[in-house]
Length: 115
Length: 116
Image (cartoon, rainbow over all chains, first blue to last red):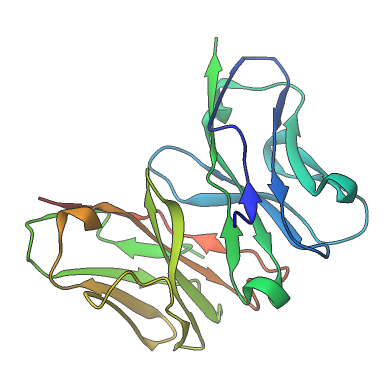
C-alpha cells in the first residue's frame, strides 16, 4: 500500500504564479512530515518539516506547508514561484511505530517554471 | 562541515564488473542510509546503519549488493557482479538520531552509476 502519495508527477507554473504541491499520507496517528527538494544533479535538501504545534510551517526559500489532519495532507505552497524553483520535490513521512527508523518518500513531483 | 561526501560522482562500468561506491557521513551523525533512485522505482532505501551496525537491509535487492561501515566516518556499497539494471543514482544520507522521528536526513550529491 502506498504510504505517501504525491498525485502530481509533473506541474508547470508561470514565473511569479503561486504554487501548491500535494502530499497525502496513510498513517493512523500524526507522523513526522518533511518536504525535500532535489535540483538537477544534486542530492535532496530539506525545505521544511512538521512534528507538532502550529499546523502551518515555514521553510527555506519562501516555502510553507500546512498540515491538515482531517485530510491526511501536508501540501507545500509558495506564493510566487521563481525560475530557480524548478526542481523535483519529495514529500516524506517518518513514523517510528510503523516504519521504524527510516523515512518513506513519495514518488516526487517535477516542477517546471515557464517564463 | 562539508556535508555528506560521496565518491565517485559518476561511474561507468561494464556488466560483470565490481563497483564500489563510497560515502563519508557528517561528523557526529550516528545513522547512515543508502538509497537508490531510478525513474521507474523512485527513491528506495537499500540499507541503513546505526553506530556502524547494519540495522535494516531489507531493501537490498539481491546478494550482489553488499554494504559495510567499518568506522563512523566511512561506508561502502558494493555491487558484484554489476548488471545494466543496476544503473541508477545512489545516494548516501546521514542523520543524528532517529530518522523515523524528528531528525533531518542530510543527503550527499549522489553517484550516478551506468552499467553497460
